[in-house]
Length: 198
Image 1 (tube, rainbow, N blue to C red):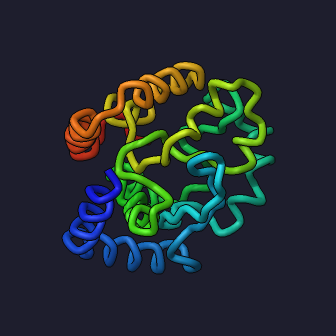
Image 2 (image 1 turned 120 degrees about the horizontal axis):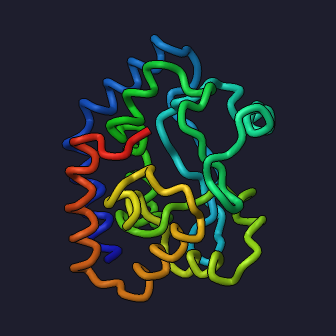
């Protein structure tokens, strides 16, 4: 799995370089500031690492999180935060999110060994600290991934964290390279046809 991850990540980075340029130039024009966004996430066994994405929110997004939660609520049950039409997202970035271009820098996390191509999505450290159930923490028994079962099936349509965890644990308990391949192949049309993207 690790060998496949690194080889795929390297090849995909090379083939996707035009998209990296498109994202970088668009961000610089649409919302001057850092091109990349770095956030501390919890990886395998809870090990913290810096996860990279193309920046899709205003530069003060982290500072405004509490305010947005208070004013607009949370569409995801449990300890994680999710909000459609987040006001912190600038217009051009909506294109990056729709096409999942903002996720491309995570291929660098795969190369460094912090992430896998397929696996439970890594959550911010501050959200993981609020986990109350052992089942939630079992998500941390494998490397986090760029895509996973729920993203391949409907991407952002899930709003119940318990259901999200159940799908992740089913993946962990039934893992195989064939399963990884199936999830990856399902992710392609989900991205191309913008299924469930926000």
